[in-house]
Structure formats: structure tokens, C-alpha cells
Image (cartoon, rainbow, N blue to C red; front, side, top):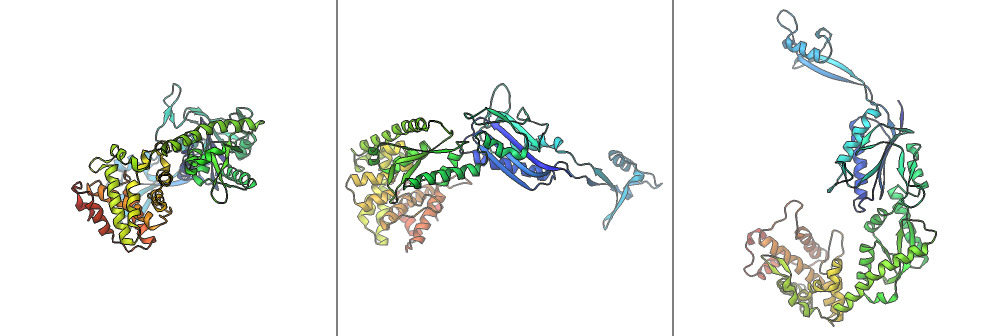
Length: 521
């Protein structure tokens, strides 16, 4: 039986970077299931993805389904023949439907009786006849929340499709998917070389793409980026500050990655590094560099999508892009320092925590009380815990946090220190949201733990106390995360605390606001 490599590729406009990997893996999984359902043998399934393509390559795929024998059971023998031995209408109808005479039927004997039986020989279909349906169904099942139309067609996909390739070995398979007829013309890099190129064999896909400045293999492209970042950082005696999520997003933005080095003015380092790192990573997808003590460097790395003959212009352009963002952070920081956190307490009255539970100002007062109660119970500084609880949410009213929400809490620490608050108060404000997710670090001190517990217990008591229970995957107040955080802090920091007693105290701080206290039992 003939076997060869199958390649399926959709050439598109730029795909959403945060969805690229999930789309590619789903496409491969869908294709594999369809091939399995078609009972075509193969040895391996590989997927490829770049900003302008999704592809699946299936190795050693059988060209034709195996012939099969299908057993078609007819009526029971006692119902298939009349008393005179002549076939009944039921028997003749069944035989006619199977293209045979009743006399040609075989018999199936079981412990429950005897039936007419026809063993039909079914000739396996060729890949040519199967491929359009296989790909069409695989595309239709992709997780695309908001498909779009383009041109005058009613065809929908996540982004406009410009090319469709279905190749088996060196042959182009006849198929039309998303209104695109299959051919072996693929998109090259948008800026390097010709805009399209011809693929001669499905086996050559990855190499042919690379020859045209497209690293189609997602894992290889991501590894190339990581290596480039680490090599350049090491040469500078620094550490590249990135995680898997940032690396994946960068890999989803470029087809031909080139790591370059840039810098910004030293004066910006006076701004808390968390704000600078946030804008570099989240807004620009740049990679900050840290020294061995964790201090931020004014040098950073970024990944370009082109191999420029004049990289200095690319570098200069990216430095111009980041400078206004850092200047904004600098301005926000200097502006915010003019007003103490304590002076912002009244402004928390303008922010609603929950309609029935009041404002953030009211929540701050409750956290102050609960944090003080917990601190007293675990032997921490009660005044520091209460003070941190009271000020915990005030950085939400600062310009910096309004612009960069992910630095809430952390910026509160810097502003508290600027205000002359005790270091333990500042640290507790910074750590109030810990642990933010599974595996995240816990608050590092008893005062911080008291505030983090108080914040979570206030939310749990309040939201459960008005009967707003999480349903399915709907948990807008992150009650599950809060509950797990409470348990982790108590158990992993070895506190001798009674959760029911803590919740009861938190409930007491709400006065008569809670209408469904029974849900807390």
C-alpha cells in the first residue's frame, strides 16, 4: 500500500498571538481524529504555526483505506419465509436494498435465533476523495470565539485566508477549503524575498519555509528566541527576565526571530522596577535585563521579525517606542508621591466593592479590623497589620495603578515607604494578594499574612453572605482562589487558626449587610 507525507497548510493574515498555539494544537488534534476515524494508518503527526500560517504534517500516511467487509443483518429466518417457503416481502425488500437475491443470503445463527445475513465487500476510499471533508471538519471545530468574514464571501475564519495547501508527497490533492482551492503556492516572509514560493514535496515543508525566512516550527522558533536572549544577556553579564508566557507570545509575533539589544535613559531607573518591567513586557513584549541582585538594567532585549542590513535603525525605532511609555511611568510615579496613601482613603468611597456590600472605603475599614484580629491571634504586630489593612487598597487610586493595573499592591509598597510608613506595613501592602495563583509564593511575614488573610476572608464572608455562590466556571469574585489562598497560608505557615472563627469575625464586621449568612455554615 502506498504511503507518503501529507501536508495541510492555511496561509492567513496575522493570527492573534495569544491564540496561535492553541489554534495550531487544536488543528493537529482535529486532523488526527479525522484521520483515525477514516481508518488511515500513519506514523506521526506534527504541527507548525507562525503568525501567518497553521499547518499539520502527517508522516507515512496511507493513501487508501483498507477494503472492509460489512455484515448486514436481515430479518429473522422465521419472518423471512412464508409457510410455503417463499421469501416474504420483508426479506425481498432487505435483499433488494443490498443488491442480492434472497437465495444468496447467508445465515447468522446465535443463541437467540437465526437471521439472514449479507457480507458486503466495501472498497476503501482514496485520500483524494476524503481530504476535503477531513480538513473542512477539522477547521470547523477550531476554538474560534469571534470568526470574521472578508471580501464578498460568507466564508468565516479567525483571519482572512489567502492560501490553502493540501499535498501528498509531491502531489497536490484536489480540495477546496474556506473557498480556497488547494495548490502548492505558499506565503513567504512578508518582508524578506518573494512574497510566495512553490513547495515541491510535503516532506520539504519546514526546510523550504526556512529558506524563505520563515521558521515554521513553533517549538524551534521559541527555542531559537530563548537561546538568543540568554546568549546576549550572558554576554552583558546580566539575566534575561522572561517566563514561558512571554516567550510564547513573542514566538507568536515573529516568523524569523532576530534578537537585538537596546537601551533607555538611566534616569528612568528611579521609577520602581515593577512598573518599568510591566510596560516593557506587557505593552511592548520586550525582555528586561536584571543583574545578579535583581536590579533592573537600562539595557533591554527585543525580538525583531527581520534580519536588517541596518539593525541600528530597528534598535533606534524600538527605543523611540519605549521612551514615552517609561516617561509616562516616571510622570505617574512622581505625581503620585505628592499625595500620601492615607490622604486617598476618602477617594475609596467612589469605588464600589459590591452593590450590597458597599465601597472600597468600607472594605478597607473591615480589613483593618480583621487584620488586627488575626495579628493578635498569631502574635504579629497588631498596629502594623491594622494599618496595612486600612491602606491596602489606596494605591488603586493612584495614576500609576490606574494605568498599569497589574502593579497594584506592589506600587502601594513604594508609596507607603515614601510616606514614611513602617517597612512591615509597606511589605504587607505589597503581599496582600498572595498567593495569586496555584504555586505562587505566600506572604513572607506574619503581618503580611494577617493582611492577606483578612482581605480574602472579607471577600468570602461578604459574597457568600449575600448568597452569590460561584456557579460552574463563573466566579467573578475569585472565591475559589480566595478560599484556597486562605487554606494555603494557614497550613503552609503552620498557623493554629480556626477558619470558622475567622469567618465569624469577618461576618461581624459587616453589621447587618449580609442577608444569607446561612450559606457560610
